[in-house]
Image 1 (tube, helix red, strand yellow):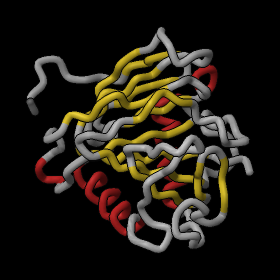
Image 2 (tube, helix red, strand yellow):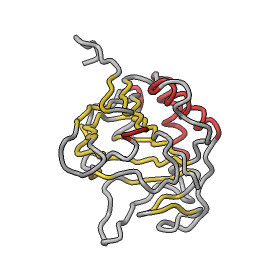
Image 3 (cartoon, helix red, strand yellow):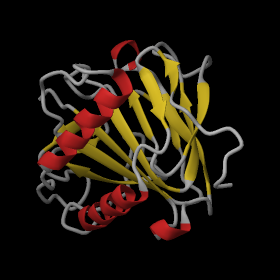
Image 4 (spheres, rainbow, N blue to C red):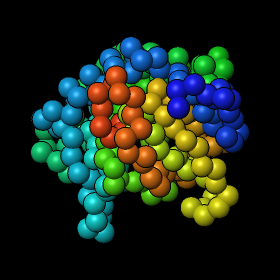
Length: 216
């Protein structure tokens, strides 16, 4: 329900990992959604990611700045249409830095510019297994923004895909930042909650925008 009996507050999930509810107001959510829809168009648009073992990820993805594929980065959509990856706009660097400062404090973003975005689209059946964001050459915090349907976000430990982990409900507009000792923690999305997106957003499904420093 919209009126919370107990309003959601920011929570430190683990050292260096912070959940900030409602970080994006409705207007900023709409603006980010409009940008994501533009980025999803070909060339180098929304694609299905295939794993080295021959499987496919259920969440579809588009990249900015550099193209991620299992398990590395390229300048072109090497496992898609082969087109040059779309540029990473400077305003996303500003957004990422503001997010890290709000979540972790001044100076936490470091000096290097954010230069990669991985944008994942989840339909009602999509999920993401536990994994680490370990293909970057930088330890700068990862910024994760949610639009659309709610999801269960599972944030684990740095050693193994097994417990201990913490399940967090992410809603449209929520921010999750993880860096420092939690930068290489395993995390994933076991399920999406269909039909829970704000009606005024006009999105069926969930978008997750992760912003990173490549260090490349």
